[in-house]
Length: 186
Image (cartoon, rainbow, N blue to C red; front, side, top):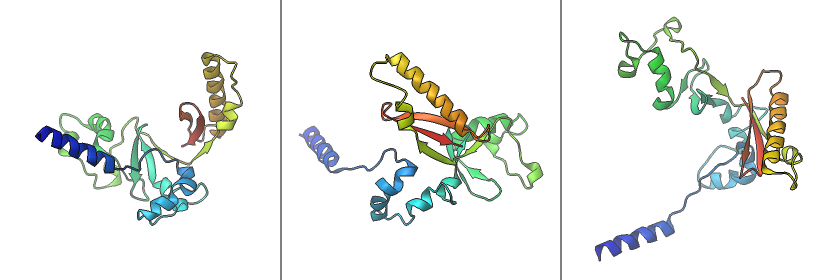
């Protein structure tokens, strides 16, 4: 009886639970999410979160070390991220005499700051939908291998085109099982 009651509580709780999560593209916030987000208490506008032409919250969020997110917390470039994101870099800077993983580190001056060899922080500039352009290169008569090659070739062209001669890092990606394509400029 106790197990049946616990199962019933779990089922009822699950039926009443709701989540509003998932992947929200920044460029679609105004169209898809702004009203609902403001009903839940958000005070920022979609433009304050993501603006291509003006300063916005997106300018404070960076890609740390190639995969983690971090936040800019000073005008001088100080970023905060999760411990596991910086762990390898901290270990690289540590030595037997200076175990920064255990003891931490605080630079009192700019000259005392430690410089890792390969750490990169990328700033997100913009994203754009290139679905129509990429899908115009494929057709129903193509094999999967032909389709994948045509998509890869067009993605490579877009990435080269949008990099502004190497000024920016551009990466294209497919979403929704290959039905939509976007590029991201860093």
